Image (cartoon, rainbow, N blue to C red; front, side, top):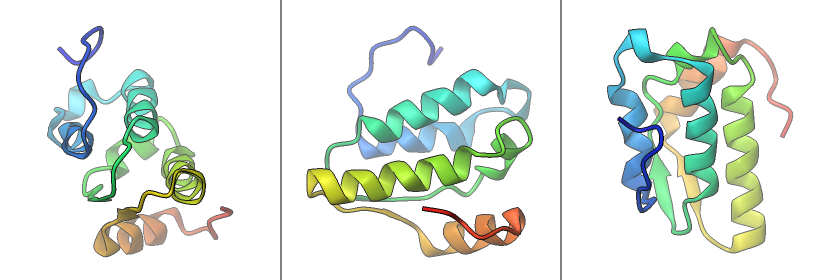
Length: 100
């Protein structure tokens, strides 16, 4: 349903990935999530409560998303943020130092 469709990207669009059934988790949806973040052009707090499901197929996804957010904040003058509980939880699950 999501693939091949043209949506106006809004911050709320990032939440659609939380509602994907576990059977649909794939590398293509991880790449689509990256693209969604790239196409957000307004300030917003992003929740990634179910991002962990993607880490098994794309271990770099969380760090890549954080890099995108940092870059957008620095270059576009918007303020994208990751909800604190999401950041703490995923960071703990990764067990590594994030290299941003």
